[in-house]
Length: 437
Image 1 (cartoon, helix red, strand yellow):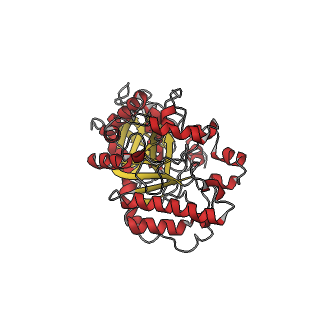
Image 2 (cartoon, rainbow, N blue to C red; image 1 turned 90 degrees about the horizontal axis):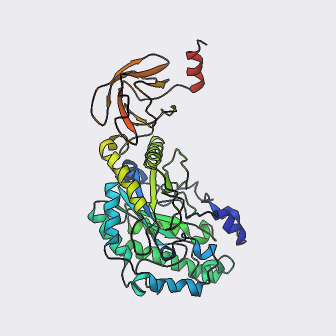
Image 3 (tube, rainbow, N blue to C red; image 1 turned 90 degrees about the vertical axis):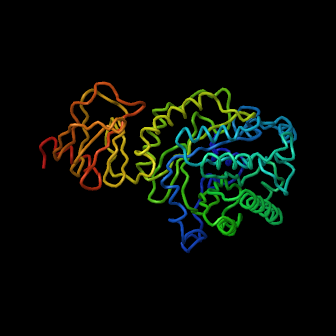
């Protein structure tokens, strides 16, 4: 994942093309690719889930200076690998994460099985640079999978294609023999991950530097994944379109499946000095914005080296989960929503039901401009209390609302409409309100 120095900046410094900074379309994508045929079936649960937990955890967590510390501080590799002797997590930490995710209303988890540092949290026959063969002597991926399943959550694996530890990780760009060795190493480890842990729901590739799709043999990679795990879904970061896109640290809707991945503070891996935590209100609004655009929200935690989760992460996620326990109908299982215009509220929908997620509660009335279908009933989702309203061609106005917000960090109004909720063009409604044709 990115850090304060963007992936583009890092690659420019490394002398690689900046074109590798983001997933690129493969020249072969005009013809059918692995996974095209049954995508809708495989992704049904994912579209309904909306909210997942991302987990960045590795040797960098011991230092607590983000996941790019090896590169950012130019630490000699011989020095960095010694961190493996200090990486000895507490027992049952993965179960604590899974319980936190469940309380937060998250439906799936995605954990780093290998980040750019090259250290594997799983048992691999291809390297001794892995948790089961180092200090902790445990297969941490196995513990994670078992924990997620125990809490009824879907299981996802993050896997970095870029590898700072492998001797062919950079050499592969200019040396064909090295490329073949490195690609077989990467494919082999992906095969291990998708063979040794039962049913896996998501494979989340990251950073395709220094190769393109052809160099990675990405079509073969994806075909292997679908063969080993027929129900799996794949992201787009091995430079093929995959099943879903991955805007990072931003919300960017697409007409194709997409998932916005974001940090809770400014860091992916644990950073003991980063205290710029997003508020529960921001998380709820981001979640609603993703759901409104038909996307998912993958929200990251960065556990410490011992596996414990920073207390502020727990506080924020528990608050969000408490809100979702009352308002989950406004998020989980919702569809793309054509209503989007309000300074005070966000919107989601389920069929003809419009969920008005009020961020800024401002007294005893609320106006929503330009709502096209007729509203037939409305209620507060938190209490079920019916609401009074008037509606004309310019706006919908709720009257007699409580003076203070009935719920925090946002209050949801459920409005039943006689058609799919939508709003007319902002300029058109502005003209109507001013008596213009």
